[in-house]
Length: 217
Image (tube, rainbow, N blue to C red; front, top):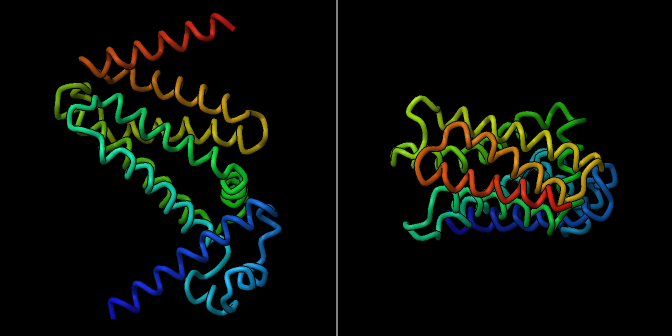
């Protein structure tokens, strides 16, 4: 039974990867279940049985990629600062975008146009929130986040800010460099209000560097 479940998971992962490649090449509207079935070498009914539809396939791949962000933070040494952990997670997310920009644009379009994708978008958001929330909760336990601050609430504020900037990028209003700069500055400003001690020092130092960089442009 375990072997059968492993085989099913492998097939799902293969289909997700193929779907991501096709949507990057053709766009959201250009991805059809028939073409995906042909490229993945499975039947159309198999796609529906394993996932339920195109949006579900893309969401599954998106969730898998978001999960890799937490995996990048986990190996950091115990001595790593809370700010360093946050930066590592943010940079991992940026590398994901840089590696597959058209896939993430397609996901943004899906979330904007498909009501059926909204529950899946919320699941993806929860994965992203968890990465920030867990780091803030650990920082709060160490006395480096204000006692009155809710790690979950702060994480959701940070995600809302990032999503707004991400939408600008997905619509072609920002390039990847601008997305990274605006999002990182915004999240540091959010953190500056709740960080304490060494965490606060790191946030302020980062913001100061950003301000100096802007002044030199």
